[in-house]
Image (cartoon, rainbow, N blue to C red; front, side, top):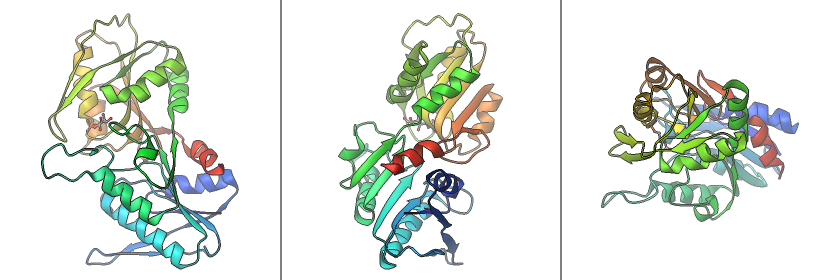
Length: 294
Ligand code: R5P
């Protein structure tokens, strides 16, 4: 087995390889002036099970679609170089939220992404995929898929750092994280209701009476992108005179200054390190390594 750190997976891939005592190499990735991608393996992959670690998030120089092209080029090149099997370990897997045709003529991005992965990999591992209308990864991928969850580590972080919390899930889908984390901690939780009008506009409502009783409010969700879901949710609860707000999520995308917006709203955010960011305090390298042992 050899672990390959792709451009947006190397922050975790090296750690995962160390835990597995496996060979490790970084993929060399370049962009030509016209925007085309070139990748190169710097280690011999012939006859090996190759595990490509790629987290599909964008940054200034490399957007989410560049990450997709890179992973597919790497998978095909590994095969061309004689790899035995090619696996994808995706700490953050994209495009899962577009899981239906919301408006006529739209693409169902989840299906297209799954088709790409099916066509190029032998097995896929995903940390906390955003599964909403599709209940399981096996309904999405045709190849063998493995879901990894960071819930026990999120629960552990909250247990150690925030006393007597009230866990709040900002929308219905968030119960898979908020409710399960609350159950693991053994504390109270409430799930709010959200209506999404666009990629940036959401309305979140609290349809239940809750007694904060001086408890710190901890929003738990799978991802924070623009931060608007959490900001909207906090408006509802702020009316109830909450003392302190936290937000603990798996994937910290933090686009369009989200982290700063949350800080200004007095919401302390913490995430796992599926995507590197300033508040990625919960390490998932152990759970990814454990999954790869199977
Ligand atoms: C969607 O349902 C997800 O679980 C998140 O709540 C959402 O994607 C967060 O996005 P944003 O931070 O842009 O509101």
